[in-house]
Each structure stands twice: as structure tokens, then as C-alpha cells.
Length: 204
Image 1 (spheres, rainbow, N blue to C red):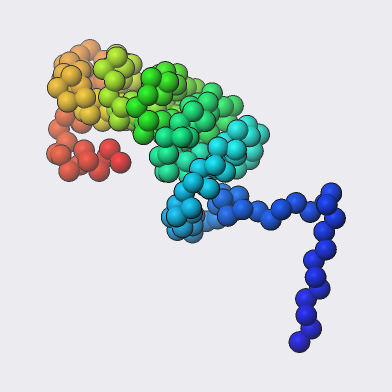
Image 2: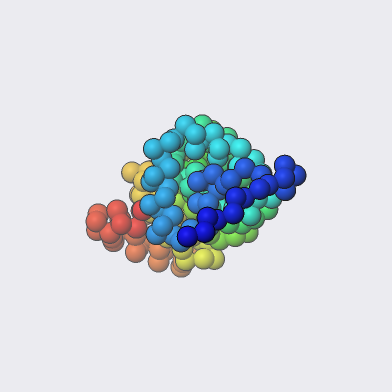
């Protein structure tokens, strides 16, 4: 059996081999989840690599890397994920909005306020969801306004987020239920009528 020829690289043509994290965005979703779980065993190395990769604004893999960073929930990545809230790519902003709910910080709330009025509705939906996770009472008026969003999914996420505020959020929904806006009223009625199990499933 013939041996394979040895690979020879010139310094100006061959870089270092891809790291496992570099390959993550190229994998199928099911494989990606398994691969991500394996990477978590080397958490310090992964976090350090993400810190560097998330700074590359023109990296085509940025949406998937931000998604992985969101699943990681590492506090050290909060600043980088907050900066991505203003990225030009809407998918990156979606992932930033999703991630920031895990970081109850003043800067997270400021970024999520902007994202809650983003042009891309998936970013708005994830932003109101994350605001519910943080449950800063100063954002209640913003979530109340989101009950009138043009997109049904954003209204749903806003209503579910309000339920996380306990009595204060429920009162907002009760007001909307008898209010004059038909779309806010319909969403409030639906969410207030959901059983606890359904609320838990929707909130994921």
C-alpha cells in the first residue's frame, strides 16, 4: 500500500489547522449540538477563542458563533454579545438579543431596549423575550407597547414576557384584555387563558 505524500506548506500559503470551534458553524444542526457539548469540556479555551472571533465583524460565521455563545451563557462574553446588538447582519442581532437575556446587567437592558424596536421582527421577538427573563420593571411600558406589534410572534413573546413579571406584568395584560386595541386585547386574552404547562412550554 502506497503511503500518502507528505503535505508541505509554505509559510505564506498554509495557516494553522482550523480549531474545533472554527468547524462548528459548518456542521449540521444535530451534529453541531453534539459537537458543542464536547467543546464545553474545554470551556476556558473555548471562551478565549470566542472572545477573539466575536470581534470580527465581517466573519461570515458570526451568527452561528453568537448562537453558540448564547448557549454557553458565559458572563465573560457579555460585553462582546452586547456590542453585537448593533451589528449590520440581522441574524447576528437576533442571536445577541437571545443571548442577553442570560445577563441581567444595565448594559444588557439598554441594548435590548434598542433591539425591541429593531427593523427585523425576529430580533424584536427575541429582545422582548430576553427582557422578560431579566424582568426589569422599567421595561414594562416597552413590553406593553410590543403587544401592539405588527407581527404575531412579537406580540406573543411580549405577552409571555409580561407573565414573568408576576403581578405587575399580569396587570398590564389585564388592562390590555379590556383595552381598545384589538390585537393587544386578543393576545392578552389568549396568554391569560393558557394553563401553567403551556406557559412553560411557550417560554422556552
